[in-house]
Length: 422
Image 1: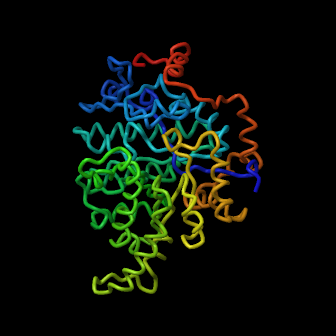
Image 2: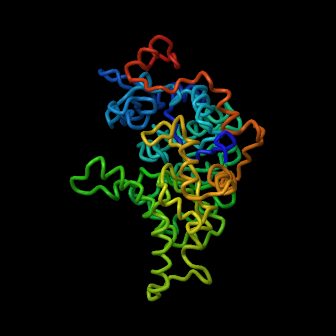
Image 3: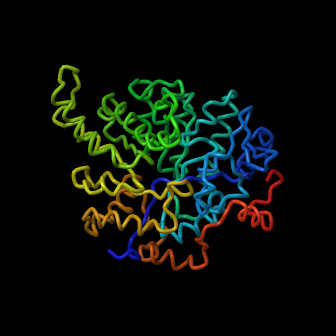
């Protein structure tokens, strides 16, 4: 396959929310209570909601920065590549990267909505959470039809409200909801519990995907004296913990229509786990598990989609893993991000694994579109959706290294969001 003929869907990217995101989605009486951005004395952007202060972490928006400027230190909208937070610049960057469509996870709200779930005033939190979903679906995704796969967050502190919001966002066009990998880390019941059964039933009824993005469950590997390197490498293994709860619990067996996407965990854990769960099940029957005529690996494959950025060794086992459960991500604008050469990076891995053109299509777009029940060509014709066609629209997109200071200078000369707070 030639790189220009590829079609790419990134099932895991991120939005850095713009400062004015709530202004058009709340009744006026709530505006002064909405999350808002303030500048610290050092000139860094910080979201404030109730008594929570949430710094913007530099590592979450490093695209185009020189690597010596990367780190967990705070940053500001002014220091970021505008594609991190400006929808028009995001689409231009997607065009340059040959990405047709993207599913974006929150930043200030937490990947699975934790900011609102841990708020003190739950009535206020529900108002803000719904406004967040309206902004994401109607404004961020709605600005460019066919370029984004909308997903939402849910008010998990109240099951009735959770199901109501799930149904509401499904009607608005969401194709997924982002959930915590390990809810017990936040004090909720684990996925072993039947407390989640109403949610599992409801999400199957509306045919949405349950997205589990690494991050919320990282406290499960908070080892003594852990350093950044250990933390970032081990974070993908939280996915394995989440899989275990859903597989050995009752969720995957009692809800056959349940669809779960494991985001940013890669696919390297799959060869080991698929072998291990089957070996365990066949050897340790005294535990009482019953998968009927199936093996645990069969059940896992039926329910799952796993995405990767760079797993060249594991991809060589794509037939053994099951090609229908593998998808691709670019992780824009995080530090693992593949930009502006995601198509080339994916194709090199696929060629190294011996993938056919049909295999590449499944990995690069077909599996994600099928799993999410999303038609990639509903708004954009297939010839216009290729890497070559998209890049033809992006000839003026700058791809060189640009420092934080330079982005700030450009921002101050021509702000992308002219708000009082930034």
